[in-house]
Amino acid sequence: MNAPAVSPVLSPGSAVSPSKVVLITGASSGIGEATARRLAASGHRVMLGARRTDRIAAIAKDIQADGGAADHHELDVTSLESTRSFARAARERYGRVEVLVNNAGVMPLSTVDALKVDEWNRMIDVNVRGVLHGIAAVLPLMREQGAGHIVNIASVSGHRVDPTAAVYSATKFAVRAISEGLRQESRDLRVTVISPGLTRSELTEGISDSAVREAVHDQMGIAISASAIGAAIDYAIGQPLDVDINEVVVRPTAQG
Ligand SMILES: NC(=O)c1ccc[n+]([C@@H]2O[C@H](COP(=O)([O-])OP(=O)(O)OC[C@H]3O[C@@H](n4cnc5c(N)ncnc54)[C@H](OP(=O)(O)O)[C@@H]3O)[C@@H](O)[C@H]2O)c1
Image 1 (cartoon, rainbow, N blue to C red):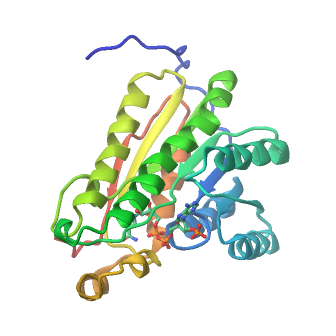
Image 2 (image 1 turned 135 degrees about the vertical axis):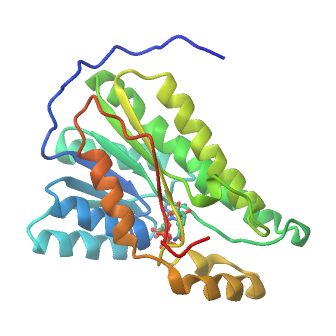
């Protein structure tokens, strides 16, 4: 299908704004936290969102103590209203919303046979609906501004399927499909998909099947630091406005 573009064209060579307002979902741990710290250190103004408000408050305070610009707001990405209120808070705080990092995600891996339907639904709610809610919360404003950048965190599991990851992979394939569709419909918006491989974070703690959790923990010896993903996001954001980094896979050198 070849749908017509619906947004105006951005002029080539548009200047890079040195300091952007960046909203980060799932900023209370792992990749989201590392990204907030990295982007703030690069001079961007960050708004951290997550359900564990004590954590995002402490991280924002830490960033401020290091001289960075950071604030936080409670966020449950499964709720459109909560996600809109997060975006509103960022706009009220900083006046603009230039980048959204749709990072919040869960990964309770299990075989399909285990029929952990509640966990399937939670993955769909956070990893797919959450990403869509993020887009819905910022897109009208970015269209009005005539520019914006949406960075969606997919996974190596959005490029390949493995046993126990059928539903998780489905959600991450969906993130890539949504991103590509949005990109094709846009001429004023940058859309980036970052696909991490094994990365140290709290993600595996949500695996309820102990045998699967143990097997994944055994693989995590080669995992890379979450700051490596933050660096890739920083790179994508730092390009001139007419340069759109669309797909980046960042995985351990030793990952098969
Ligand atoms: N670690 C890896 O190996 C790896 C590999 C590929 C892709 N990824 C992706 O990277 C992203 C970040 O994961 P991570 O590895 O950094 O794991 P993590 O440390 O567990 O972080 C997940 C974040 O998502 C947030 N979150 C979960 N449910 C949420 C909800 N309903 N509303 C708002 N925030 C919610 C959590 O915050 P609260 O619980 O405080 O709300 C937390 O900040 C995920 O999308 C994950 O799928 C990770």
